[in-house]
Image (cartoon, rainbow, N blue to C red; front, side):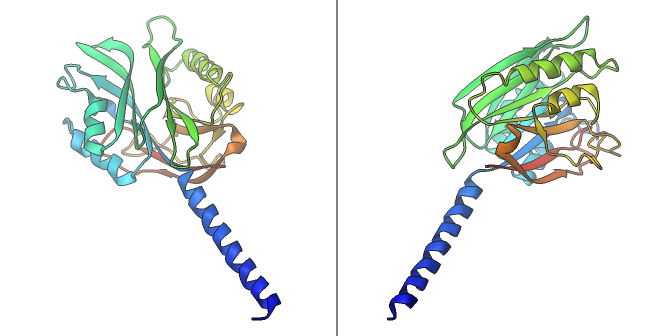
Length: 264
């Protein structure tokens, strides 16, 4: 064979292998993130249906799920540990983080993960007066690529005064001090784009939503405002592949919010 032709063939095959290797690597660094306020297991039909909620989660096939309004063995949730039940129904590792005692049990945040946890912590968030305590639940996990990331799920104050949401946004930013790994933040922040709490967060975090035309997430029956988010840090380590509000008007009063990110 002509030596020049052999060199061309070798180069072509090598480039093909490199391209294939990069595509596999990119796929292993892709993370499907779902933020879902589950309304303590109640549905808009007025019943209690964890299978329906799990079905919505399974349909989106997320790697990481931030759950808000999660009950742990309360009377209104029929004594169920909702995070564990949904983990079992979706085939994912589960974790509950307490924000406060409530109705014979506890109330707070939950995380579901396709991958196991190598570290977890529950971080109380500041609140004032008689407002509800809030928390941020954090897990560390390893992607198929071997990259370690941190995932945080949270739920900010819902009252009309944004004082607590401002304090809570600042506390979440404080969590980034000394961050050794890329971080994803997801949750119901009870604040619209352009509000003070969101601007405080976006000083540090990248956001997955369209800032020109933010897709509303609440209420699920006729969404009119965006209050559910997925954010990422550092901004230059993540690329947003897609962002979607899942249109389901029955499983909860919030629409689930699905974002696909790629770790660069």
